[in-house]
Amino acid sequence: MPEITPASGGAEEDLDLTVLLPCFNEQEAIGPVVRELRDALAGWPGTWEILVVDDASTDESAARAEIADVRVVRRVQNAGAGAARKTGIREARGQLIAMIDADGTYPAKHLPELLSHFPEWDQVNGARTSEKGTLRWLRTPAKWAIRKLAEWIAGRQIPDLNTGMKIFKRDQMKHYLWAIPDGFSCVSSMTLAFLCNGHAVRWDPIEYRTRIGQSKFHPVRDAAKYMATVVRIVMYFRPMRVFLPLALAVAAGGLAKGFYSWKLSPQHTLQESDIVILLGAVMIGVVGLLADLIVAQRRELR
Image (cartoon, rainbow, N blue to C red; front, side):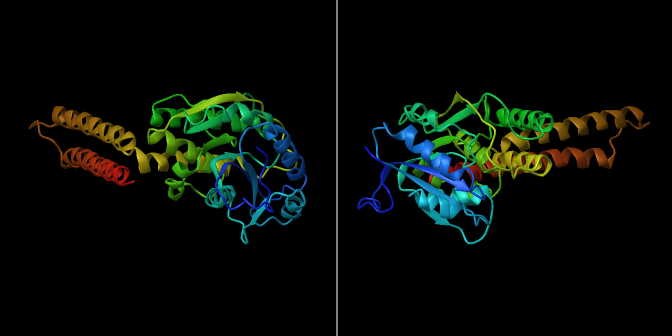
C-alpha cells in the first residue's frame, strides 16, 4: 500500500508504520534521506508515513522537509535528539515506528528486511558493522566500555547499543517515555528499557555511512552522558544489578577490615568503623530490595 501523505483523507487514522526522522540543522541531508526512504519502502505492503520532527533548527531543514511533502512537526525550542524522538513517538500514527537519523548515515534499504521480523519481535535494531564518526580512536573504546556495562546489566549480548536505526512497537515504547532522556543517549535508553522489561529485541547487521554535514556529537561530554544513562536505566528497571554487587563489595571490605582489626587488637575486638561498614552493607542491600519491590509493583500495574 502507498505512503499516506499529510493531505490524504486517511491521514488521521492509524497506519502500519511511521518513519521518524528527528532533525536539527540537516538541510543538506533531509531531502536525499526522504527520497531514499520513499524508494526503499515503495514495495512494502503496508500504509506508512514519514514524520520529520524539527528540533528548532536554525537553517532551512523544516522548510525543505515540507517541500519534500512529508509531515513536519516543529518544536519551538531546541531540547535535544531524545526530546525530538519523544515528540515524534507521541505524534506518530503508525503502529510500528522506524527511527532513522536525518544525516544520511543509515541506508534506508535495510528497512524492509528489519520490518520483516514483526510482529514476532518487539524491537529490531540495525547493528552497524563499522564506525564512521569523528575521533574514532576515542569513540570506539568508549562505546565498547559502555556496551560491556550494558551487557552485564541486561544479561545478554548487545551488538550495537546506541544505533540510531531501530524499529519498535509504538504502544510498548510509550510506556517508557518517562525514562528516556532528551540527549543523544536516548537510543541506548530505548534499547535497555525493552531489554530490562522482558521484550523481544534483536539486531541485524547493517552498513553505516559517513554523515552529510557536521556532527553535533561531543565525544567526551556525550560519552559521559551515555555511561550515566546506562546506570540510571538499571536503577529504573533492575536496581539489584547495582545494589547487590555494591552491598557485597562493601560487606567484603568490612569483613576484611574487621578481620585485620581483630588480629591486631590485643583484646581481639572489632573497631566501631568495622561495624559501621558492615551495617552500611546491610543498608545498601535493604535499599536495593525496596527498590526492586517498587520496580516489580510498577511493572504489575502497567
